[in-house]
Length: 290
Image 1 (tube, rainbow, N blue to C red):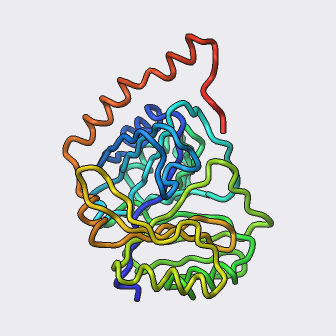
Image 2 (cartoon, helix red, strand yellow; image 1 turned 180 degrees about the vertical axis):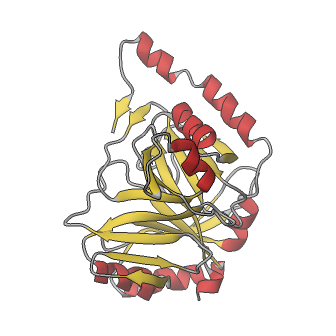
């Protein structure tokens, strides 16, 4: 099962698009892979529970076909989102980035750094391999229930576990999902989403299996259209702690997710045309805080 499924990306809601892009590009060395602008909300709540204008930027260290990347959703007019304790961090292996940010010459082999929107990144002083992004850490109230869902239902392999932590992935070469035991899990408004791809013929059977087991289906099987690009079929699940998981049909997503050589320019143009900060400042107001 594991060989037919792969990890794709983590979704962040961001309030300060320019500062976040500068952080990811200039400090962490990522590249803009795709950028799209939308006039209304996504049918699968890709941008959260918002109906207005928004944008999606895919950014990472290489093509989405063989890299775990980040999806940045920016809702125009929203300046920040209240964060919970559900998301704990993205892990990146890179000796070069570690050296670049380790200005105090700390002797440990991992440095935590926060993005402008307050999301944590852990930079490990290790060789990066094909993809520097190694995985994501999330909070869970029950490691056994997390294992039953992610391993038993979704089919991720257990890499390591103890009484406080659980690490799983579809293969050693793919990004892992790392769970840390917590007394409670609060998603607040900044909650994200992890995405995986699988053969489209496995999508509806997985949805049925989850439903039969009593798990939550946030978005039943739906096909999403992107003008001028491939249609993508998705099902969105929630695990026992409320973490969102999006499974997409591999064929459509592979076509949709090709690197766009014009992505950087499209993003730059969108940011230059975004006068929301100036508008709110002129009115003596602040962007909405969610």
